[in-house]
Every structure is written in C-alpha cells, then in structure tokens.
Amino acid sequence: MVIPARLSPEEHLFFSLLLSLHTGVARSVRERERGKEGPLNFRN
Image 1 (tube, rainbow, N blue to C red):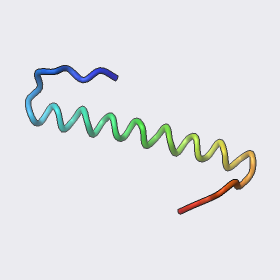
Image 2 (cartoon, one colour):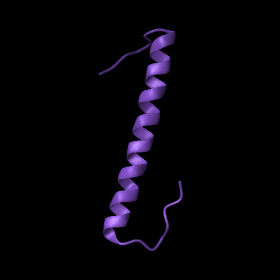
Image 3 (cartoon, rainbow, N blue to C red):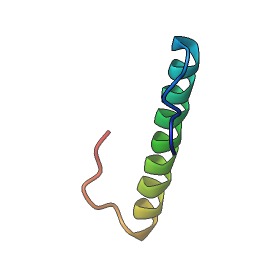
C-alpha cells in the first residue's frame, strides 16, 4: 500500500492505522491457518 507524500496529520494517522490494521488482520489469519495444521509454537 502506497501512502501519498502530502498528507495532513489526520490523514497520515488514518493511513498508518489502516495499514497496521491490515497487517494485523493478515497476521491473525496466517496464525489461524497455521493453527489448523497443528499447534506449532503457540504463544499468547
């Protein structure tokens, strides 16, 4: 995801929040998929 260079602080905050949300969701999905295969090194 490309973040435009000229943003107001509010827009920059929104984009970074959206990006962190997206990566967090992707990571949780990946963790869930790995959990189906078998509980390898599970950590809370």
